Length: 112
Image (cartoon, rainbow, N blue to C red; front, side, top):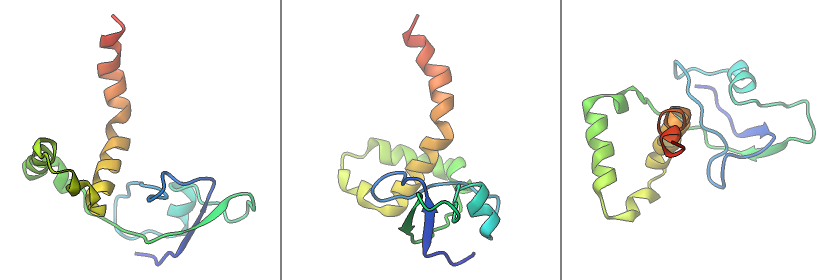
């Protein structure tokens, strides 16, 4: 994995996360940051954010073990588990991945 200390983008995702994107492998280069994360070093109006690049293998979350973990999180009444940074990244990744599917499949039901 490429060492990355700053990311120059137009805006952050939220206060704690600059961006969350998927990649088919752990080895990323400048082209990945330019094409997937929309980093533009040539535009001075873009802000330069300090980052700690974290890669997580996510394919396990789509297995039965991942389903059990997500169900346990859903059924938990302890809100301190959401302070776990890894869990926050997993939730943000899944939100981005499924957001449009949920809107397309569930939202039209409410307009009927």
